[in-house]
Length: 52
Image 1 (cartoon, helix red, strand yellow):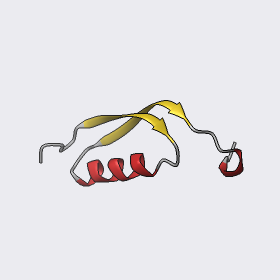
Image 2: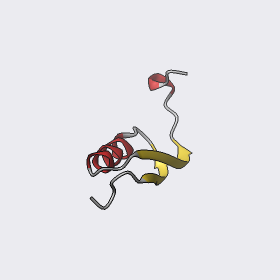
Image 3: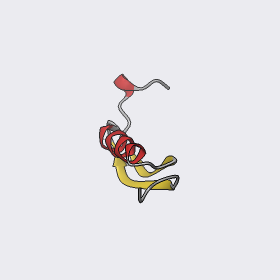
Image 4: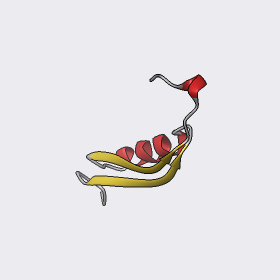
């Protein structure tokens, strides 16, 4: 596999719900990536959904 045992950095401009990042990371892991890290430039904060 092309991604077998590779570490991947996924770059996203804006993280809202995290659904896209989660789906991409899942697909990359399924394709054989050893690790998927995410870099996000902006985070949409929703106080009602926050666990902070």
